[in-house]
Length: 231
Image 1 (cartoon, rainbow, N blue to C red):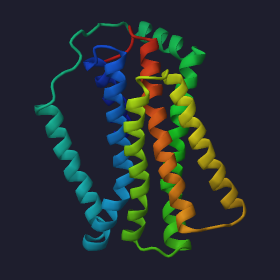
Image 2 (cartoon, one colour; image 1 turned 90 degrees about the vertical axis):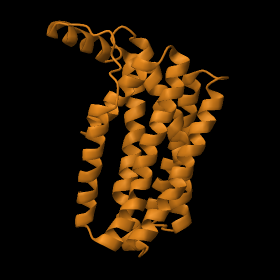
Image 3 (tube, helix red, strand yellow; image 1 turned 120 degrees about the vertical axis):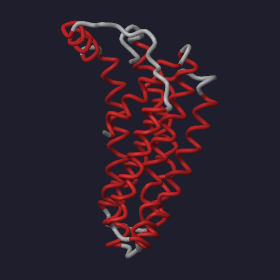
Image 4 (cartoon, rainbow, N blue to C red; image 1 turned 60 degrees about the horizontal axis):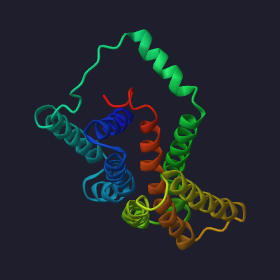
């Protein structure tokens, strides 16, 4: 469900965008809210855990899922106004063309790598912060605020710079920032140097660089196959 909503959201962004510029802007905000949700969820989840217990986490998710379903079914308009009855053989042919295009694969790999680093951090962070540094659930949630701040700053910076620089250059800049953050964590891990500020400050930079990659790789990839893109 999570992956389906993410991919469908990008498709809807393409459907409602008039041109590449509008698609970049819409995609930027889509990715900002998506990444913010991931970054801030431990903060909200920690409060639910502390005051209501772990069972409340799943009840909350169920309630949010029902609200989202009702909203999508009864309120959201259909964005695909030009439906095509494409034969299944043509669908497979389109997939083959996309997956054998090196530039598209590079955009997809760049986006996937950024996602992987974000999810790897959020997966292992509770172990480090709560078991190694002895933070409680609420304190751990607060550590993600710097990541969320970096995401917000990266969104607005990308919006300004996208008007002056090619998207490929911004993607390269974001990849460079993330690479530096990865090297910092690698060195600290190798030296067994665990410090609260050393762990959370680079994530501000990571969040900043992340929003140079996600919306731009998505927009560039979709722009390559305008006929196939969209719902």
